[in-house]
Picture 1 (cartoon, protein in one colour):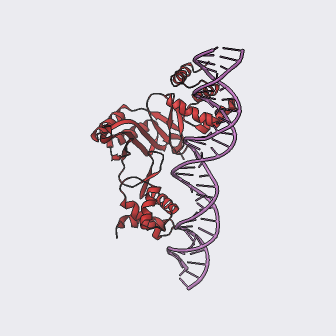
Picture 2 (cartoon, rainbow over the protein chains, first blue to last red):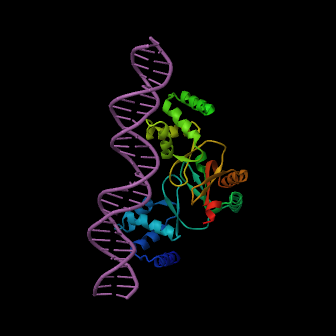
Picture 3 (cartoon, rainbow over the protein chains, first blue to last red):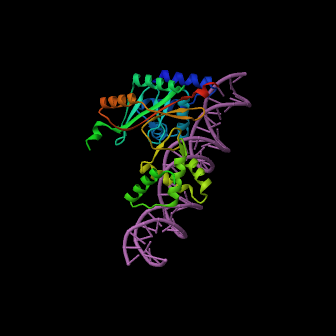
Length: 142
Length: 142
DNA sequence: AACGAAATTGAATGTGATTTTCAATTTCAG
DNA sequence: CTGAAATTGAAAATCACATTCAATTTCGTT
């Protein structure tokens, strides 16, 4: 059985919150983890449906919110559509405005600077959004 | 008459694009410029309506898009709602998750780093979004 | 000042993603 | 096995945003 770690994390979360373990949640988690990149609920629903035709859109939608609450997924939005990615080390995004390609990057220095700036205003930063929009190598040719 | 510079800028834009000068557009621009901060179209509509009850929501909405196209306004979105701010020098935002306060800041260093990172991936950055979410001084007390 | 083509207005309606409702079903502690 | 509580999924509601269209207004030309 794949994705043991994530399944156990989900199980703990469900137990702690008096929620129930269901086949649907398990199946959706599996499909979500098998996807690389940033999927919308609709995307994910289509993929889930290919393997589990009886699972409805609403369940996929609700399960993604659940996975976000459980810390297994993160919601992003680059273009007005909610997209989900598997939670992993903090990072920012480069988004190509022509082809939609999304590249992730990390930068300690920017993080440090953010905290320094927030400190000036007495702010305590909890999270941030940092996205660079432009054209990727391939799309600069046109 | 107030806001002469902006009114002239709008007039030029209208003329260049074969659009027409109307009382509504003038009134909406005035109200928009009188607001400090980041307003939604609904916010703005309410304020416009207070002075000009005959102006409809749609006109406010369309005028804000016009002002964005004309470079007089900028659209932002921190919480899913489109918000408009008066155009001014480039800056990023600090947003308080409790009270909604929005503080603007600038940072050359971050801008430079962004370009350096984008360069690594062959990206040409056209614009970016950089928002720090957290708690402001006042809201940390609670 | 008046004409008329073209743009604008604003109420109503459409759109599309997201969210909620609710009856039927499933889970799971006892 | 039982029953209370959670979950499911189809349908409907919601919400912000965007468009439609007939009536009105603007403005270059007469």
